Length: 154
Image 1 (tube, rainbow, N blue to C red):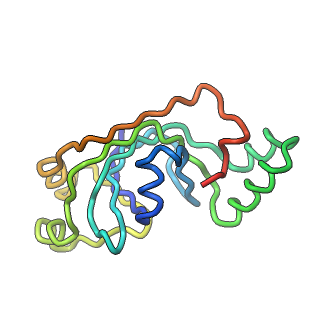
Image 2: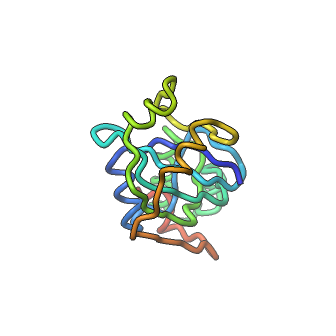
């Protein structure tokens, strides 16, 4: 499983942490399972969790699949203005914080990603793996069936 650093706004991070948000929407994203360290943008500016992303869904496929549900189609079309994909959030794990200053001290050229960066084989991944500790919150979701009420709601 590939590893990456994925940026989130604090309000999105909180929805994932609470279990309210079960899909992550992005314009571009790889079609493979991903383990991502979650970088929370300003004002937090720190790695604060881990998310495991599973199956990638094309929003246009959902639009076809749920074409008989007007509310779902409206939500999907709104999301399609900014996003192309939805990835299943299989699991969330809260972690201790690794602040931006510590990341920059360990890897001087480090710049927080606007979207995501791959970490496999990097000095940054070594640093994170060595310094991160698991927190108390751990959530997992199952996706036996995706229903229209779940799509494009957060």
